[in-house]
Each structure stands twice: as C-alpha cells, then as structure tokens.
Image 1 (cartoon, rainbow, N blue to C red):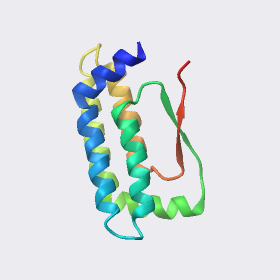
Image 2 (image 1 turned 60 degrees about the vertical axis):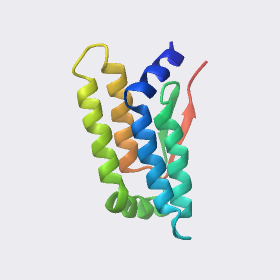
Image 3 (image 1 turned 180 degrees about the vertical axis):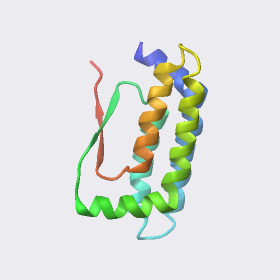
Image 4 (image 1 turned 135 degrees about the vertical axis):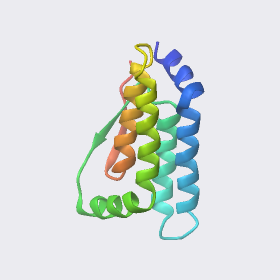
Length: 123
C-alpha cells in the first residue's frame, strides 16, 4: 500500500516538491559555507519524493537552531508555503487526505529542517 501511495504522491506533487528541495540544495552548495545546508536539502529531497513509510524525528541543539533561523529567512518560507498550499488542495477530497498529511509533514520540516532525522517506519 505504501508503494502505491509513494507512486501516486510522486505523480501528484512529490516531483515538484522534491525538485524544489533539489534547487534549494544546489543554490546553497554554490558557497563553501552553504555546502552542509545543501547536503541536508538533498537528503530531504529524497523524503519529498517518497514520503510514505518515513517519519521525521526532531532533535534540538544550539547550532541547529542558528542554522534553522538562517534557513527560514533565506529558503524555508517559500518551500513551506508550497507544501502547505499543496496540502490544503490535497485535503479537499477524502482520498487526498493521506497525501495532504504528507504535504503538511514536509511543510513543517521545511520550516525547521536542521536537527531533524528521517526515520524509516516501514515493515
């Protein structure tokens, strides 16, 4: 069931969301200082392409808080808004609610991606 969910997700929004993460990662990798941020964006692009069977666990540290604030100002808000509006549109129908929940998960992650880990929850 999760494979089918991932395939449908990829067709109806996951591709666009994943490409937005990839573009943000490439822009961050232009500078030497931004390479760690860009690498995190590439990891999260994989989650955005195939979000089912995966969950996000948030941790805390002072360094990740500082990087999250810089991320939020530079790149986080546009990506989060894109995932949020996608989630609202997907939740209009009953069939789209599981996909909308995945989009809201990605919107939250787009606001504070550093210090977060992607955990595989499949069987």
